[in-house]
Length: 174
Ligand code: IMP
Ligand code: MG
Image (tube, rainbow, N blue to C red; front, side, top):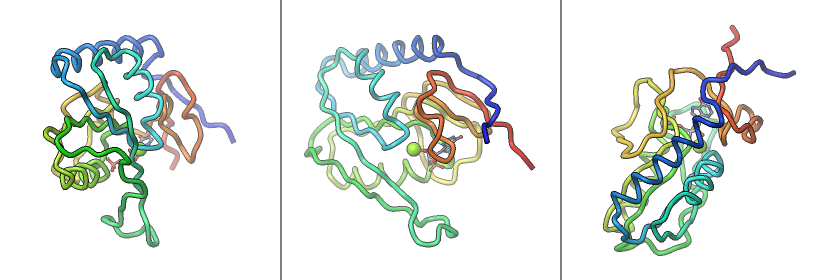
């Protein structure tokens, strides 16, 4: 069955905003090298567009997080993949698709912190306007979006729609 997707961010708006964000990051890091850690799978398109607009020298790696157990208990989250590169003493920027409850990013931040980066910031493509369930702050945000289920530009619904160049809302069915 095909979902009806209502566009909320056009591909042009997204590309313009990603260029702005890259410019802001370039200015903030003032030429000091950066280690970008993308969160799989959702960040892959955002990260690839972001880095192609960055002038700052960077190393790119990925982490992956997943729920485990029967999935019924909040808190059952773990990292399936940790970074391969050494981040000790490095300036690290975590890049993710969307900040929702914040639980995933809080876990990733806490795990990476143990490896003693000199500086650790967070960049998200989208920030959902909802209540966070973790103490988390994103330093760079592409767009604020309403508390609805969004897809496209890396974000999926049951594995689909990641390849859309725009972002849209899937209307909630009751
Ligand atoms: P968290 O609730 O902030 O831990 O978000 C965990 C992950 O859920 C995000 O990185 C996304 O992969 C996924 N997610 C949260 N909200 C949405 C959405 O609206 N669309 C698609 N994926 C979402
Ligand atoms: Mg994700």
